[in-house]
Image (cartoon, rainbow, N blue to C red; front, side, top):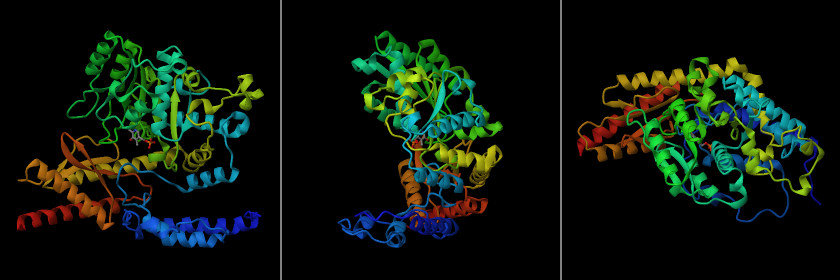
Length: 489
Ligand SMILES: *Cc1c(COP(=O)(O)O)cnc(C)c1O
């Protein structure tokens, strides 16, 4: 007979787990930022076969220390500057725990009205916090939904765009090989993946030119590509503009791109996965330029820079009709009076899977704990630290700063004077590998203008100026060491 954990046992172990997490937060700086585990090392520490008999939970906690922790890269470490941040925070962790505790599966309004209605309110709250246009509010034809990721949001937006462009036929008759998508070389790879998933096909994804300096999409080239495809009898279906690209936080000119979309009747999806949440600060509201007039859908990730544990993406649409048209199916076993009344939202019709977690709880916890003021302060801290770092890089002889750094990502490289470009790029990568292997900090790279750049993304809640400063000192030190070694050879 299964021995379920009793509430009393849960209380005991639960306290241990919460204590463990709090201890982790206190000692996080003692770990090397990047896990030093070699491939297969964690796997080799795990028994090959599952246990026949159950065991005490203390064994799991002990193995967490022994087996799991060496294989952890510490995303919440104050010296984590890789990719983009994936913020966790106390209130978000507690919100997620409550969600697990309730164990709700929120596929329909009827399967827990609070799961749906809290989510609706959180989408509206967040739209207000970010100063998003009224058309995204849920009391009109549009509305917002929490998806698992910006990738899903893009996929869902494409399905809605296909529904609209085909007058509802795409979902019924399948695609005819004529629908086209428009991205730039800087657009997130999830769009290409979505082209594969939807059956549009990567061969029908057009790559719009970018401005060589800012890496922003060129609306005139977009216009030409769409016109060419339309003339050839194709169906231009969706343009993805990005506000804050993954590589360098380039900002596509949403209004100019939107103007082109409107003229050709093409769906405009705006991907602001990382940068969008920064609009919580009024001085950064320029991030929203063009949304009110032109965006059909807009997505941003509170799970990156807005203190809400992964996963939490917000997707808003100006008109929910094409979205639910594309995704709604009502089998007999899900029929219920609330759905049939048309008075409620069933978010299963706004996403790919049927089932859904109660993610609104963690967003609610975060927004109430920090308030708009606290959220703004968090974003401003990240932006200010990044601008300070950019200043140090600019002032350091032998380093090249990438000019565009409006938010909290800064890209740069050592100049490596005298080295040919390919050797210089190899040296930049070697520098990154040595820094990351040291465990002192973690940063990643990109390529822009044909050159390898290091990316430092600031935004972990624990990051303070001293962490950025000592990371920068380590980078300069290590670059000088590589230069000396090269000179000695
Ligand atoms: C991070 C990122 C994504 C992907 O986000 P997920 O939520 O992990 O799918 C998409 N677009 C941009 C611009 C990003 O920076």
